[in-house]
Length: 125
Image (cartoon, rainbow, N blue to C red; front, side):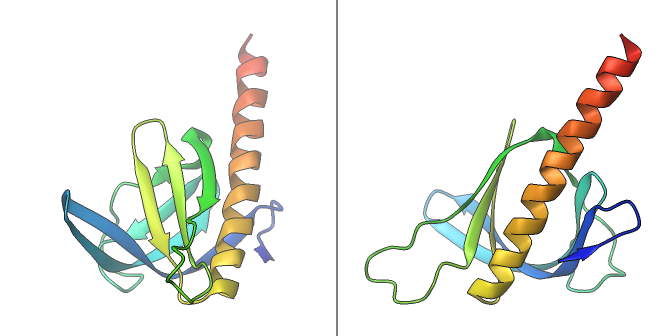
């Protein structure tokens, strides 16, 4: 896990995001993600330079969990979900090790974002 100067986890790279158009049509779209500060940023395209989509605010994340494998699936779990107040994101990493890195970084960053937010709230009271 790489950490920036503030001690926050920093990770970036390609993940596949599940796009659900209708109930039965699911597609995986490769996007470039960067975990930085309080946000998980992602680009519409596959490179860093494509314009950003709206980021996921880590302080709004309720939970992050690995997607359970189906019995017939022989591969190791490399997909995970991020639950926010109003949306569930499903991502897939290139392999289990990469998924584990993302999960660890996101969990630490979410905890730090929530802690930072509660500190800011108490400062204003």
